[in-house]
Length: 160
Image (tube, rainbow, N blue to C red; front, top):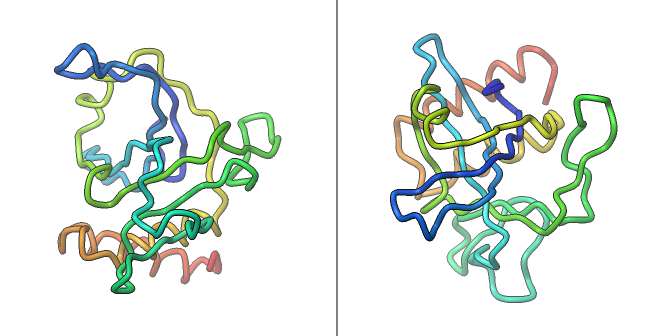
């Protein structure tokens, strides 16, 4: 379920019960210690780009820094388990300063009820997202090392 590139949908339980809601999680990396690096998405307009200037994919602030990734609801981002094209039902954003988390798989399972894999990202979308995170000042150096490794492996396997 938490394999890299999987988009997982479920009911997220928060410490504040009023924040409990259905959300998407995108699994980005998992290692032998079952630590999952993932991000929870938002349908709020939080790309950080000037309103009306958000683009599908990586978005930068006025200083040219990568700060978010936007999935427009008209763009195919992956394939469902049955092989159909998948688009998010609404435009969805990952903010690198707020929606980037590292947890063990058991921790995720403790906060997500009824998780289901809704799609697997395409290699192109996945590599673009990883590259944008790698370039973001909001992502820690430790995670940048992980993302450099992901892109290196994808390159070796002819996926870039």
